[in-house]
Image (cartoon, rainbow, N blue to C red; front, side, top):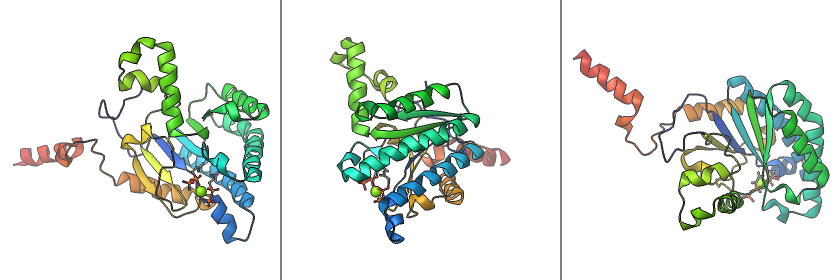
Length: 259
Ligand code: IPE
Ligand code: IPE
Ligand code: MG
């Protein structure tokens, strides 16, 4: 189990262990080029490929990408079915490459609404890559942060009915869809909007937030590096004062000793 940021102060490192991204702006990217929205989604898949590679190269261990929210079913039917087909094609084309590169692939979200073909491709990909550990790539599909908290609570109470009288954070967290990953250190949203749109609500408790106007299809390894550099300049206090941070306290100590 990983440290909960609210129960214990987590260790931090210059390279975020877990990056979670809302990949937004595909439609606008296409519109700017007088192309159909679908063209933007296609280019979005290429951006995914680059960012997975970029994360693996710089030592990020977990990458979680928001691909389809529980609210995205509200979109026009033709766009929804295009996105589903694109997901199938991407799985068919990319999974063996991910596997060769040591990437573990996982999907979080309510899969029950997906067509059987898509669901079985997802299961096969998860099965094939289950022993890989260079990078864990999670795709959030038909995912919603509220759905996750509710499904976790329901599953917990089903398995442990005695907890209906009261439960703690650590009782619940093993049932959350992302329980196999540490909490995201860095949250990125492309496309200019400054909202979380029902993404991993529980786990964002102490994530550093980074918003960029860059549209997702244009988000490349340079843009990723910029986000990581911004992250490296943050002071992650987890409720403490600046003076209490190990680096700052150490410096103060050295100064005291020097006289
Ligand atoms: C994000 O891009 C992709 C999905 C939500 C599937 P959008 O399709 O939301 O692009 P914009 O926000 O309309 O530009
Ligand atoms: C969030 O993007 C969901 C994904 C990127 C999958 P949206 O484009 O759907 O978000 P809103 O509707 O602008 O908040
Ligand atoms: Mg959008």
